[in-house]
Each structure stands twice: as C-alpha cells, then as structure tokens.
Length: 299
Ligand code: PAF
Image (tube, rainbow, N blue to C red; front, side, top):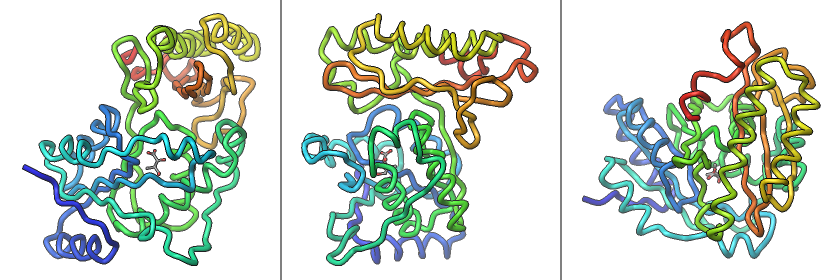
C-alpha cells in the first residue's frame, strides 16, 4: 500500500476536479513533514470528516528565521509517506520550492493584529511566511476543510483570520494538542532534546496547567503569571520568551479572565525552543476550577 505523491499544482487540481465531479467532500492537512502523532491525529480527524484527504508536505523556507534552522529541519518524505499510506490518505502533495516560489515570486500575505506579539514578536517575518504558504496551499488544494493543530495556537488564529479576510472558501478545523504521557506537547523538536532536557520539558505543560487552574478559580492574573514565570525558570528552562494570558478569539492581552482565554508560552531548553498553550475558561461557564473539559482530560 502506498500513497500517490503529487508534485505540481496542475496535477493536484486535476485530481481534485475529478473528486469534485464524484461529489466528494475534500480535506487538506498542511504539514512540513517529519510527521508525528500530532500530525497523524489531524489526518485521522480529516479522514472522519471528508471523503478525500490531501496531506501537504512542504518545508517552507519563508517561515524560518535562520538558514541553519531551515537546513537542520528534518526531510523524511519516504518515512512520512509510509506513515500516511495505512491511514488511507488519498494524496501526498509535496511540491518543490520552484513550484511554490517560481522565479519572480513577489507576493507576501501579511496578517496584522493576531500575528503581533507572542511568537510574532520573537520570530520576525515568521507569520508572513506561514500566511503566504498557507494561502497558496489552500488555493491550490481548493478543499472544503483544512485541519490545523491547537499546539500552534497563534498560527491557527492567523490562518482563521486570513481565510476570513480573503474570503477563501474553506472551513478551518482546529484539533486539540496531542501530548506525551507526561504532558509534553508532541513536537518535531522534542527528539532534539537531551535526556536531561527531556526530563525538564514536561514541566512547562504542568506549570501552565496549574496557572490556568488558578486563574480559572479567580486568582489574580498578574501575580499568577509572575509565579508561573519564576516556576518555569526554576524548573530548568534556560530562557522564557513569553507567558501570557490572551483572549481565545482575537488574542487580545488580558489582565482579568473576563472571556474564554488561552495561556500561551514559549521557552528555551538549551538550543531548543518549545511552545505550548492551554485553554482557560471563566468560572460561570464551567462551575469548576476554570479548566476546560479538554484540559482536564489532557491532564
Ligand atoms: O504548522 C506547520 O507545520 C506549518 O507552519 C504549516 C502550517 C504547514 C505551514 O508551512
């Protein structure tokens, strides 16, 4: 069993056109490859909702902040295709750089507002790169549904905003973060952690969960965030880029929990930058300690 690999836009469009003629519902799952359980959960969700599923694999140079990071990014197309085949994916769309960015390419999709702050403040140009390639992939695939993980929550909101602002006719489906047993959010970067760093890594999720529970139960936001920042550094993280409470819908900074929110963090363990986030719901909506059902299940 193998999954057909498509390399060009005309080939992709021809296949999608044939599916449309059959009346199929089509989903796309954009990835940069190096597929792990997090990606596969998106693919399974797509297979549940659509008749045909396209997985895209393109390591997008425009969203990397350094040439060394781009060069170090794993390229594992064969292994990725082998993971997708048994699931029943219909196409792996893996265009080359010249297909995505032919000579003379001069357009950038830049989403304001939700791209600002958080990762946007520490990775200049990153979300322009993401928005540009996602816009292209959505227009190339012409799918009804597109699946993204909540692990990259700011990216998810950037994608939602560009789809809304540019009237791209696709439903964005968000899927929950997949975690290791000890709570560490699954990421392709985790394999680069040393043994000691791997032991420290899940503390980020644990501290976020505790802080979310406290804020949800009514603790003051500023004090709780200050305590959580100290706890992340005390746990062994070398550097904290940000830990912030933001409105879930538009990522506006919050100093009180007056609407559904997310606690988002990025921190460095040695050379590895990890991000994570967790939902925080105001008390009247759950009657518990502010943690959502999903958060309690994940915990
Ligand atoms: O999340 C990713 O893997 C990438 O940012 C995406 C959405 C595939 C765009 O390159």
